[in-house]
Image 1: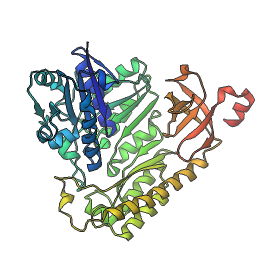
Image 2: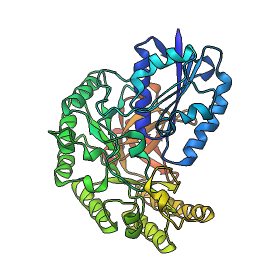
Image 3: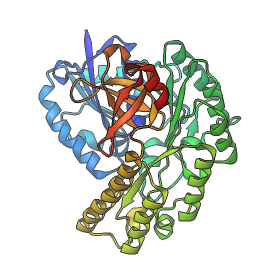
Image 4: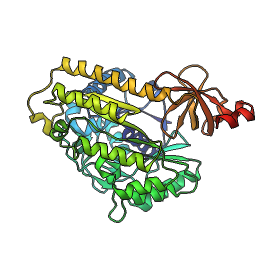
Length: 441
């Protein structure tokens, strides 16, 4: 029995790609293992968005090499593999193969060649590649990622993604709906549509509004999510489709990157502060009770204290439910490399600390207001601590509750009983007397 171990870093797209690789290798008789010491093939699926992510992977490769036995194969795949290509083979002698996101179909052949001593790199972009004939090997039978778009045509000055994922291309709507229908027939009730700028989806005939309506109409799909959208691609058609499709969850991850119009212009984002706020208002008007999260970069070249203060004030004004915050990281090959006036590292660190404090304060204030309210949750699995279960609301809030393992994969009504500021404790309403359940509802 041949075994494969894949360690995944980065975004949901990388998680989806790892499921795809398990599917590719599963057709060749490989069996998944969670133990690198037991694997014949060790793959690290990588992120290249920030230098820290790449350094972490290089460190991890040094740790994993101790598991490599004679005849075993070690590979680096994903965005970092695409960015560095054959240089990785020179940099890490223990690595046998390097494969970018469009090369996973070649995995079995390249692994076989590596066993014969032929180290190789496959980083060619393939505009046609959507892996339509490869069923991903998914872990979760209830919730699934479905990739609908690959690549990116936007050219934000800080972003390496167009260089690691290639040009934007969208799958045919019928192919996406067919995959979702097969998932639903197998018991999946929640899907998340994935794309680098997912709401710019267009297959030549259908736009993202058409896709939302079509996927939301699939029998058995109870929850529909998508990530990551681009703010100005929320057209009136898309907003109407979201409002009229019951499966669409009341949650959007809406990257802003900065609250300063001056900084946004230097980033080559296609909106300014006010336009972003207009999109927020339009989304909240279309989807009542909407929760919002975002991405924010601190310390982009030329960012002044005044620019940073505008970011802090935007967080307060929008009242995000959560934010993923990052210090700007120089990426070779991106236009921002040429921008002068870099922010000192110690100032980036100080600013991101202040930003995190504001994000947490705003989120905690909102979450405290939800204590005592009732919600539908999807029970996802055991919590990381104690004997509790972890569940998620339609608004992407995490709740911990007591209940039997048989609840995993089912929907429950719960009452929030407390919050740490980020997650909630919850009480299943079915455990309460009917008159109390009615009162809380």
